[in-house]
Structures are given as C-alpha cells and as structure tokens.
Picture 1 (cartoon, rainbow, N blue to C red):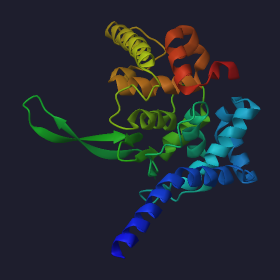
Picture 2 (picture 1 turned 30 degrees about the vertical axis):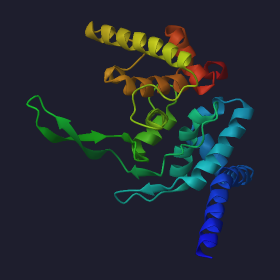
Picture 3 (picture 1 turned 180 degrees about the vertical axis):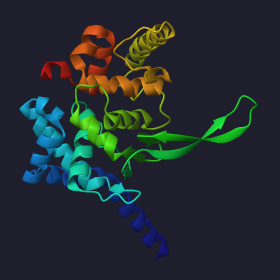
Length: 273
C-alpha cells in the first residue's frame, strides 16, 4: 500500500508539472483580457508619452503585458516610499516595452522590483590591484540583479519617462539587463535562436563597441553614451535605451547595430515616428 501511495503521488506531481505551463498561460490570458483601467490610461498619457508613439495594435498589446506584469511582479517601496498607481503604471509600461515583439515570457526570473525615492547606495565587491577583495560603495539610479531583483530610483524613472527623446531611460536599461541575465551572468549577448545569430550579433556588437572606445579615446562626440564603453553588458543596455527612445538616429548612424537590435526585439521603433 505505501508503494501504491507513493506511485500515485508521483503521478500527481508529474501531472502538476506538465499542466503548470498551461495553467499559467490561461491565467495570463484571463488577466490580459480584463478591461484596462481608465485611471491607468490617464496615467499612461500623462506619465509615459513614449507609449503614444506606438501603433494602436502595439498599444493594446503593451496594456495586456502590463496587466500581467503588475499581477505577477511585486513593486515594493523602499526607504519610506509609498508605491502608488503612478509608480506601478510607469514602471510596468517601460518594463514591458522590450517584450512587445518577441515572445520570451514576462521576465520569468524576476521576483520583485524595489523602488527608492532617489539614488541609492550599494556595496559591490571589487578586487584591487594588490589582489585584495574589498567593498566599493556606489551611488546608483538603477541596478539589475541576477537573483531576480531590479532596483530603481523613482525620481530617475519619472524623469526618463517624461523625456522620451533624450535616449536615457533607467527602466529600459535595467530590464535590458534582465533579458541579458536570463539563465546566467549579463555579458551583452542575450538569448538568441541560432549559432549563426550569435556569430552575427557578436561581430556587429564587438565592432560597434570597439568603434565607441576608439571615438572616446579621441574625445569625439557621438550618439552612444560613454557609459556604454564600460563593458559589453552595459553596451547592450545603453543601446537598447537608444533603440526605443532615439531609433531614427540610431538606425541612421549605426544601421548594422539597429538591425541586430530590431531582430532581437522583433520591433522597428523607427517606423513608429
């Protein structure tokens, strides 16, 4: 009898595992199918003008993604910040923008978003030239952790959302890192479908990265911010900001780079303007 009970329990567990994706999909379909709250519509128009650029079909999809995101991902205020609908809607809209094209889930490894009123301090281990490991204190406006957390400074989120043409958006930046961190450490090469896609991505990104460092060494101005030269992961996050906020300039000045990002995100923001 105990063996029979164990066998039945194992069957039930296997069935639950098999049926879980179907249950999740149907639950998300129900959430996405709910009417989008009128108050959220007003907040979108007022707080996130970038959304008005989207074609009508893409706006509907974004709203559906936002409802799923807000149902599944806790947004938690830190350092006394009270999380309002303004905060939740603004963050959700910008976080879901990179999900509009390719089907890749709703940040499956993300557990929560922590929001501070302003810049916050983190201690990061750094190996000094002597080989000694020490903590380096940094003041940040955003941070993405592979442990399933995104940290954001609300004042910077609000500023970035209100100025969609400046090419700087901390939410898009940090959620590009989340895509890059899916399955491992961020390295500037998010999940791609084929080995050929990885080869093409690597060639274009490395060329653009080297060109940026060459330009900065000569003090020459350019579209891509100097912070992108920090490492390949930051390069991907910075050019993702430009892809969504200044797509025509990116496509004109860096056509191969724009083509790779367009293929990855399955979107063409330059056509929205």
